[in-house]
Image (cartoon, rainbow, N blue to C red):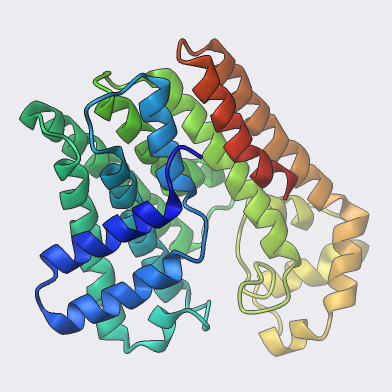
Length: 310
């Protein structure tokens, strides 16, 4: 581990305590941060690993990791609020105006925290430009995802590169810049490949879910549903009809076994797994070409190995 999770969690709470002087804002924020601490800190780890990979020495890397995780928390909150799912999360139980305000406040706090992790004013400027560029890309991608009109492979990958890959680029590149190095195109490219690979794995999972996050029940357009809908009428005709607006979600809910059978017959999950692995393999190729500390490159592979086996 390149960072200690408890230390990063403490820094997240410290930033909130320092800058959120309104007690209600602080109290709710701390409860949301506490929920986040029950999860992995992969994005913060990516920042720290890339900092060490490029032999950084003087930056407050735990503070930077905390800053990145604060933004990921804000992004998760906004994503759940927009999708209307994850009812067990504390921000879904809070009044909508409160949850929205805390999320947007955490976005600003994350930016402030990242800038404070660097002492050099010029480096702070580079960090701000990089972070804002990636966050704007993510905002565009999230809007495309919400519009749910990605009906071609090209539009799907454009959406994923903007929505998901940009956040991985931000996390990795923050470490590179804090190490005193310029923007690294190889890192940006392999971070994007990681983002695409991870999104397709998520799509495989969400296609088979049968709850409020089910891509099928929600008529979500993904690379996998596009593949599935190309099947023969006798296999997926009723699924096409459902996507075209025929029938209600309640009607579709009773067809779980029929849907799972169609998925198995079409090979859609195998297809998704292969495409995801292709992008992960491309990440590995680019990482191997990168001139950086070999020990930390291995730690990066170790960090990501769990996600590939999941």
